[in-house]
Length: 104
Image (tube, rainbow, N blue to C red; front, side):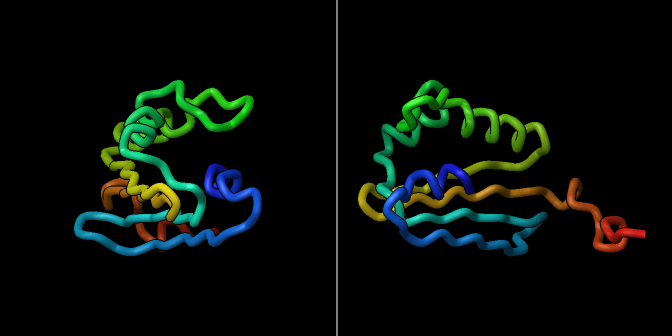
């Protein structure tokens, strides 16, 4: 979410979507920022690529690694000039139930 906000310093739209998907839950973060080319997307997922002045370029790499360790996925769809959508898929096996998550 912070990447999406920082990608739109002059404003824009930020959408968060959650939906059930076969085998789990998908959460998407969509922005109307500058978007990325396919090459930029690949570099962002490989590490060391950042548009931020003091960025390390490791945020998406670490996020993807964590999602894979959980048995999920992190996917990026981006179009230059239109924005980016990052979807995180959490498998049902790690989601638990509402009853388990309820506070006592």
